Length: 95
Image (cartoon, rainbow, N blue to C red; front, side):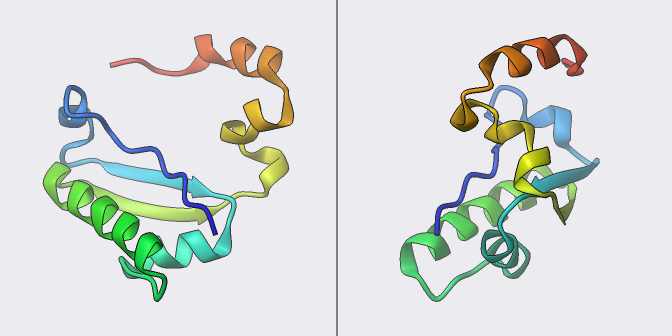
């Protein structure tokens, strides 16, 4: 199982501090690991620990919600829908 949650970089983590942050995940297994903060698989468990540490450090209130893969904009590059992704970029809010 692969895990691909976006992580705030050190330069912008202040944008997430104290906020409600929704993470859309299109994989139930990955979402369960993020909610639990651990996994039986040691590699996935480490990734879940890193994500938990980032969430604690940024002091935000995470919510993980399922989104169907076809509706997940993060999947557009793997579906070779780069043009559609580029069309969406102006709609993203930048801090």
